Image (tube, rainbow, N blue to C red; front, side):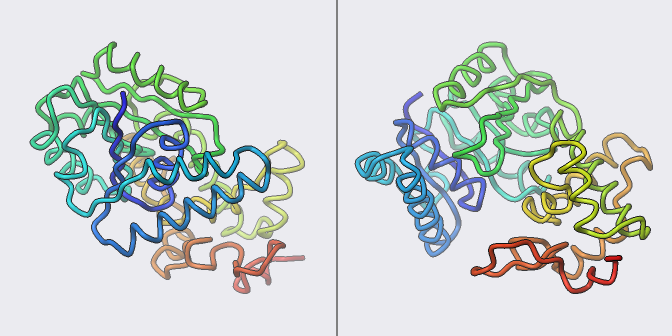
Length: 299
């Protein structure tokens, strides 16, 4: 494994590219627009500067990391020499299936195709390719450069050899890989998303307010971040998409999304990315401030 291609330069994609490049890999970062890629490089640069400030890397490693990342707007050019392709596109089933079908036609037969999907079936994704044994899930956590966990998801046809390679590669990135089998939501989101959804129901039904719910989970359960703040951080649209995958996959009302979540996504109150969710966010804000529409829930 020497050459890595990362598809998608959003929060997860640029974090994955950053992590591979910082650990000595040549990275092709691919997206559809040049300006989007330039913003991704700026984000990576900013995050590297934060690492320098903390003393975890030096200026030379920052320079080396940025030098190893090349950007592409043409998919075929970006992936043609890749040993591994990591897809980090939007969490949309059709988008991913179409993308992996294209990759199967473009990439070399030995190329491992990994998806950073947080919930969509690896087996189904692999079914669109010519070599389903080479398809696997690499579910990184956000922020990628800091979070240690990688969920390594085996599809029904993923080979043991490919799984072994990805487990070893994850350790080379100074991550801790955990192997799981393919199922809706895998492990992390099968457990996390129902908790977030239940927290939103608790707010929706007037049991308590935003800050109070998060405080109970932080102080009572030793969570570093409350479920509503975490939902804002993940993105409420992403949470809803994952919950809908669970609902479809298990066909149980247990996974029905809270109407409040559905309405917030429809109104584009998506959390940090839009500046407002359960809390409101501004570039200069340091303290969490409950969004105006939820302040009435406070006692």
